[in-house]
Length: 451
Image (cartoon, rainbow, N blue to C red; front, side):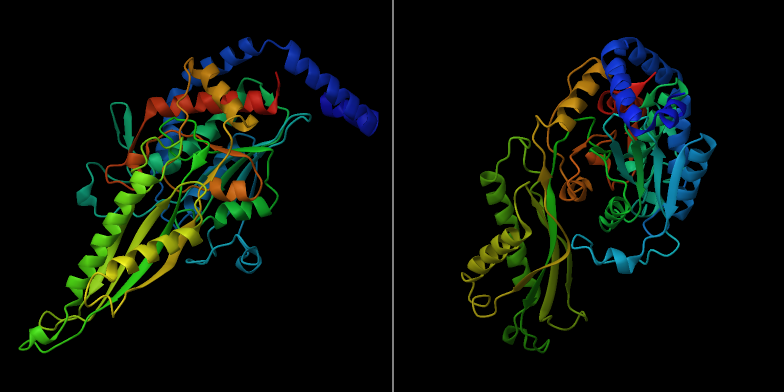
């Protein structure tokens, strides 16, 4: 009816009618009754929510193999009468953008997907952002259940991607579906991002934004322990080369075993971590030990058991608080290790080489009083009847790229960060259902609604 009236009245009438309609809906419709209806429908749809999440977990979508899950979600959107856009990233065009990252796996046969709910006009647009790819499951012997079985045990569902982040994707997908089923329609557009390649880069989210799926606000649905998180930390990978001196196995005293020297560098990295935890503070990270995680992840040295190794390579990860730059961080790491090396008679004259190599993403944050955050806090309280915890997210997410592309974003989703990339990964199904409630309420409050 609304669209028929608009066609008859032209653009002037459209503007006047939209303003009048929006004012009526926002101020006159009993939001409480509508919200109660929505929340009851979500409670009654628990089995459907769980079934959809289980279906997602059962599709192995390791980075590079996302096509199957994208086609499954697209088929569901089609069955539910929702529009979507599926396309393949043009690597050449994408890499022209300054925020694009190096492509590790070709994007051929790896479609992007965005679900689209066209608003009736007059409301703010909202994007939900999430990635469909997961890391490899590792050896099956390390799992209690089949990593792609979606086994339910009590209130938990197990499987690779349960927390990171198929539960978040399931939550915002079902929030939209269940809203529409009770005839609650957003006034602003709602975009559902299903991006690829997130475990390697933020190129998937960047591609979605460059294709035009930008909104007035966004919810990055990564696992947040059901906390409202207006900040995400950054991190960078680094490489350290250490040199020793080889020697005959019968003249070991003439050589310098690089493994012994590399251990000294390892010790320096550990000491720098302790210093940073003591000195670096942020109000959204009262316990900063996790967000500042600094460690060596891989070590390679030597090529033969009976030879003194003379070259070693250490690679590691350095966590950054919002506001810390990659340049400052690598300088801090390099300066500390070199100062530490001066104390050693060998390393003083054979200093290690320290470079940033691999992933590098700075943390971002948005003021707590920004509308996207305050609306999310109120939506949580309205949906669940309790005040949310507001903290920073420990780890990098695509909130970073959304913010850098000027989309105000908050992080919120089911799942716990302790389960991300873990064996026996699980998510609490009660949290998943509650996340659907919060996200549905967020759509109502942020976009406005027609009921």
